[in-house]
Length: 281
Image (cartoon, rainbow, N blue to C red):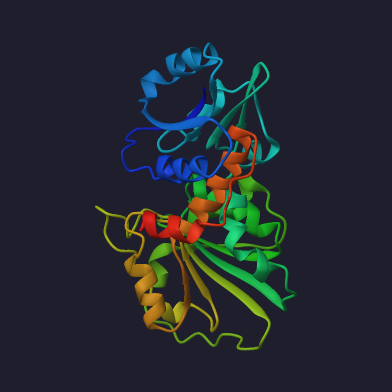
């Protein structure tokens, strides 16, 4: 029986098995999706063993392996190469191909909004890790001007330069968003503004993200990719201030759907995703 899995260190926190099991139960595919704990020292032996197993179709990749897994692939999809990180490995014939589905998965809940014309698009992107790189690339190609904020603004600038993003973008210090501002934002209709947390701040076991909502223009959408907990302090503060909030399930399901199709050869049945979101909560 065909199987796929998610690998990482640790791995018990991954919600991928629950998502794929839900879709497999609604599919004609006779497949299985597992979680497998793999340390950095075990990556080479893991891929050697899986190459020899004809029933293995591939794996999703979570922390801390997104950068190092590329070395175990025969080739990379252009997007994964541009981002410099791999979070999906798929067996395609005799090859292992590395993909990055973070960017497309992130954009999925925004597609209806992005299909509309806007006077301009701006995103305040908080964080400079692997997910931030993928999201920055996706947003820049959707016409967004980015303000990339990290603890070290120099690292933010280096990320922008390394990705060679189309458009004019800016680096900032994450700390500047913790203070109240009275900046006079453009309040015209037709502006599209996002505030995105890609840092682990707000995640279980981490301190809260220091962000004052006065830095968000009117009509902004707050989007947190943290999935544990689902309802982060960042999102609660946004809703209290009257902003729309998207939680980490949005990106999680978007990237999982892309992974499912590549791993099992068919698109998942999304008609019961509301129940799946409740399960993930």
